[in-house]
Image (cartoon, rainbow, N blue to C red; front, side, top):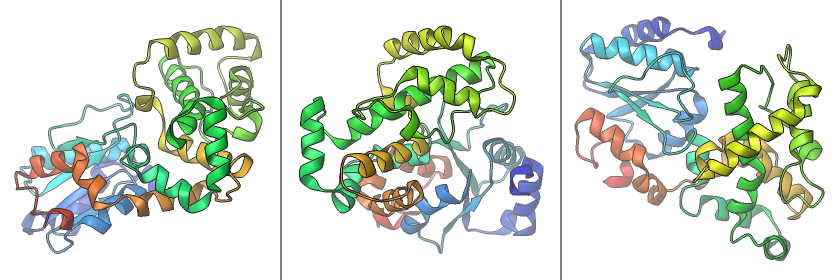
Amino acid sequence: MKEYLTGEDLFSYLIILGVPGKSKRFILCEGDSDCAVLDPHLDDGVVETIPGYGKDSVIEAVQIAFDSGFTNVAALIDRDWGKSRRKPCDLAVPTDKYDIDATVFYAGDVCRRVVSAFCDRDRVREFLAAHGWSSPMEAVSALAFPLGVLRKLSYDEGWGIKVAGTPFDKVAQPDCNGVDLSALVVSAIERAGKPRISERDVPDVIGSVNRFMAQVEDISDYCCGHDLNSALSFLMRKKWSGKASKDLIERSMRGAFSCREMLGSRFFKGIHGVFGVPEGDLFTCAS
């Protein structure tokens, strides 16, 4: 039922909690995983996260709060690429990267720490050297990037295909150094409920994906956190002698997101800016 929560429902919940009359501040997040990134670093005596279970519901609820004159409510929303029916108000702070998990993945040494904890060091080094990658982050990004571009094009063009949950075992190149675009597009069509394109459109879709990718300056802007962690789990299992599910990788990433990464994030500064308080007043990292 959580996925059917509207912004008005979420705002009503804030009223039930008595938010308007409290000195404590509240940060609306799109889901439990977003809260899990923030919670370990918050001074829970002065600020608390609330999951809203959806981008639109959070944007709508914080807009109502803004219109109602609330000064103790803000929101952390996924940056993605404007994938919402609503325009965020000034109380909404975007994540640094595509979503919170991508923000964590690309922060500081988080990815390297997790890889070191789960994988065989020599196997990782051999793979990176063989393919010219400077870090595990780059190797993982090469797998996740085409999925992000295909997802955006499908959203923009209304193709109705399913990119989420793509099985890398079926779409990765034999050497695991990238994605077979043909296999990726066919998989996205086959796994969709009612796609509006078919396999005869695959060559045109591949052409569109290649053209779009060639124009992107920073591929991390298009990499979804779930794709990144799924790709990392795949590389661990296939090449790096490590075994960890995507869910375990995501939880490990959040745990490895330290105060140093938190203090270096743009959303850390943005949240304090929205509330109009010094950077030591909400997060224990800055105290």
